[in-house]
Length: 124
Image (cartoon, rainbow, N blue to C red; front, side):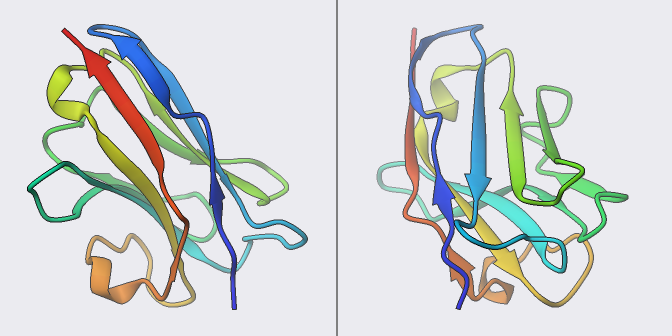
């Protein structure tokens, strides 16, 4: 079992930035491919970004490409989602997820481990 904890959410104005960390207390994430997803009210949970277990490969949803960056620290204890040029349609609960299989994994059903989510609200 892998427990994931997200943080860093909040209220930001259009054009602002936030960085969301995701960590697994008491363990490293070195052997896991990681992903970020989001769920807006009335919508399905959707893929945002993913990173391979060694950080060498990343993938993004078209809606965030060029604005968001996923990364992991050298110690492989934390995965980050840097969000720049935020827009009101980025408002959602953001979740990080981990899987022991795959490289850059875009399918939410492929992730067995999820965090509790952190709210991001972008005001216009």
